[in-house]
Length: 253
Image (cartoon, rainbow, N blue to C red; front, side, top):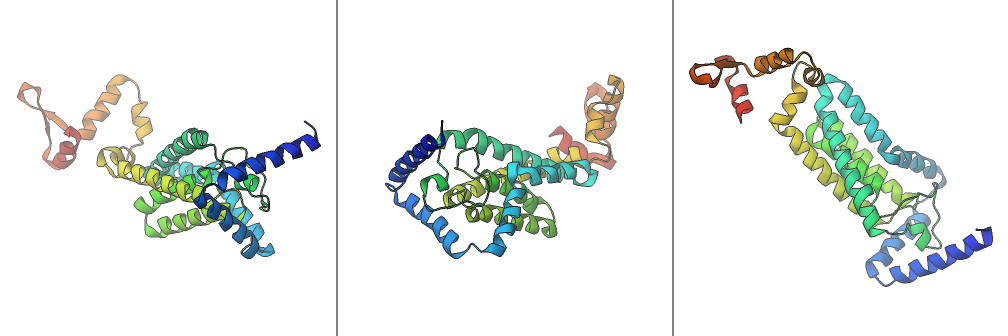
């Protein structure tokens, strides 16, 4: 397809999308917010900073690296597990399901006067993947980590979400929906990790991954025996030692 044909096709596509979106009032103000940001908020000195912030969320790379770093360190492994599970749920809901169901066109295609500050994304607009991933990991940290870690993570997620509006690649409703999905994913992940049956696997002094890969089988069985401190009484009924009664009670449940 030549340049002339591409321009003609782009014009037809814009006109079709514009006619469809003007039928709904909420979509109209959705686009007007982006045009207002472009006219009144964008400034030369701010453009570079917002580009850098928005690139932190590309493919969730920053949050994935953060989750991996937390998983490597033994003391923060449970936080890394929370971030990783939240990101996985968010990616499934956003990139696999909703984007391919809604098929919403990007705003710079529908709005003729809107210019973008980054390269054109190749996927659909709704919901924002940057906002979803950022809020998923940040909310998990906010719920589980100390405030000196959780609050900055949440502030960074807000900045990344706002940067998607600033650079002109998402509607406000895309970002709001992504933030809601991310918060839901982060909350589910945080509650799962808070469950002591799950978090105990990551808080144990011995590496959990080493335990489940130890051989021979007798060694693994001995580790399980030692961990829960079972004592056999008549009839083969397991009983906990007095020193670790509470831990054993949770194990039986």
